[in-house]
Length: 73
Image (tube, rainbow, N blue to C red):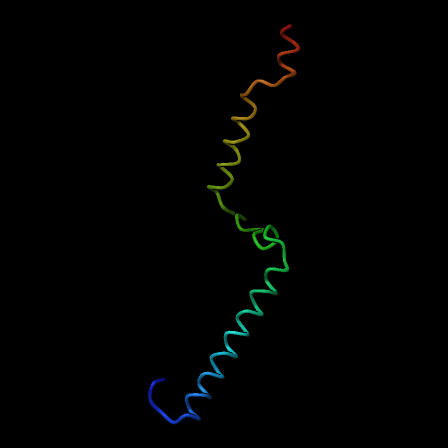
């Protein structure tokens, strides 16, 4: 961009500013959607995710609950 006439340089700057404005608008529009909706379905058909959920549930079932304490007393 260092070379060229003043008009060419201004035109190049105007085009770049227009592109940056468009990118900014797209980012703003995307941010109107809650983050969790943008991530919805990210793990669809992911066997590693399914395994992690299974292991987490298994771990939670193995932990004692306050109801278990009441039954022992």
